[in-house]
Image (tube, rainbow, N blue to C red; front, top):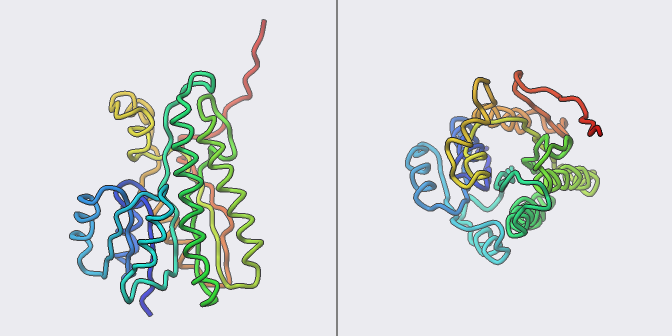
Length: 250
């Protein structure tokens, strides 16, 4: 039986890599994102499998509902939801951040994920199968200067994923939180408002994770036997580890 995966934020990075990985496995794809031209290019690339595009912003609850309710025949029974859409904005200390950036991160990383999950879950529960894969971050576990609200949104994703597991006990629906460390995509470019030089320095002289690495992790957790649930998967590049706790002196 051909399975269907819905991937939010499929226009770049983890989302696009995930689309390619599951297309190679013969899955049917529902790809969402804000940039129509990128979604169209991805559909043209993945022409060997059925692809449905839905252009909307996950922050828009009405748009989420409208697009999911309008899925064409063959795409409506979603087997896997990948809540990938998300972003970080800025790296300033909390007293210097733009409040608008905080609100955008909360609206996308938390509310957008909630919109999509709440709309897809009833069908999964009714069918007695399904898998919700949330894209968290090591920032949800390990704080760092400037991570303030971004890290807090990913801590929410971690705990929400755990609570979903509790709610879904006995329903046959799996939940996994994928928690990447340093990964090179458009993430830093977005965080630094398109400053390519500043973004590039984040990955200078090291080998970060790639979107394809994360897609491989998502593929693995989704294709395990259905009696196995990976609750959380934390993955860092080998070049990244843990730093000492700072002490302010004087």
